[in-house]
Length: 72
Image 1 (cartoon, rainbow, N blue to C red):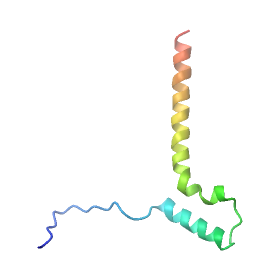
Image 2 (spheres, rainbow, N blue to C red; image 1 turned 120 degrees about the horizontal axis):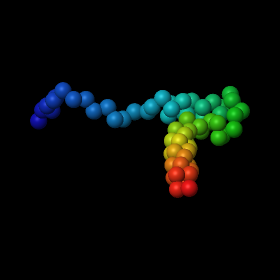
Image 3 (spheres, rainbow, N blue to C red; image 1 turned 60 degrees about the vertical axis):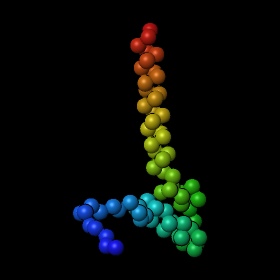
């Protein structure tokens, strides 16, 4: 049984830059090199989601306020 190469490459695995940065921060924290709060150490893991949720909340708030103003 031979594999056919159809020219497409699927590269979905691996670790991203933020995951790598987070692992470096955790390692530095556990070895005592940095004395940051765990909130800052784990920021690369959850920071993107928090930023996205903040942007969505601001957009929703602007939409609600503009709708309330337009009804007056």
